[in-house]
Length: 218
Ligand code: AP5
Ligand code: MG
Image (cartoon, protein in one colour):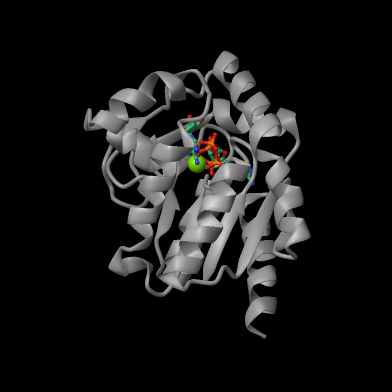
C-alpha cells in the first residue's frame, strides 16, 4: 500500500497513519516527525528547520525532498509506506512524482482528510504525544487509559509541540491554504484523490479510510 495522507494541521494524519502502520505493517513517513527528530538531534538540517517550524512556515522544498527521497530507499518501504505531511507544495508533489518514477514505484491513493477549522484548532490545542514511542493523545478526545501512562509503551514521558499554540496555528492554517491546498486539485486532476470526512471520531474515520483502501484491492 502506497499512500499519501493529505490534510490541514490537526486533521488526524498522524493518528490515522499510525493505525495503518499497525494494520499493513508499513512505515509512516512523517516529514514533521523527521524534522522534529533533526531539531532534537541538532543536525545541520535541524538547525535550519527549527525557527521555520516554530513560526508555522514551511521548511525548504530542497531539504524536505532530499529527506523523503533517502527515506523511500529504506528497506522497510519495499512493501509500501504512508506519507504524512509530504508533499506540501506543488514543487514537492512534482518532485515526488519524479522520485517515484525513478524508483519504479506507483502511488495507490491520496486520501484527503476534510476537517472544519474550529475542530482543527481544538484538536491541535489538546494534543500531546508519548516522547518514547510517539503515540498521539488528546486532552479530550484520546486520553491514555491510565492517567499519565502511555497505552502503547507504558512510559510516562508525554510532550507537547512548541508549534501547537494559537498564534502559530493561525500561520500553519494560512500556510496550508496557500501552499498545500492546491495539491487537492493537482491530485484530483490526476484521478488519484479520495476525500474522506474527517469530522467523525477516530475509529469512524479509520473505517472510512479502510473502505477506500479495500476498494483499491477488490
Ligand atoms: P507536521 O508535523 O506535519 O504538522 P501538521 O501538518 O501541521 O500536522 P499535525 O501533525 O499538526 O496534525 P495531524 O494531521 O498529524 O494530526 P494528529 O493526528 O496529530 O509539520 C510540522 C511542521 O514541520 C510544519 O509546520 C513545517 O514547518 C514542517 N514540515 C513538515 N513537513 C513539511 C514539508 N513537507 N515541507 C515543508 N515543511 C514541512 O491529530 C491532532 C490531535 O487531534 C491529536 O491530539 C489527536 O489525538 C486528535 N485527533 C485526531 N483525530 C481525531 C478525531 N477524529 N477526533 C478528535 N480528535 C482527533
Ligand atoms: Mg502529524
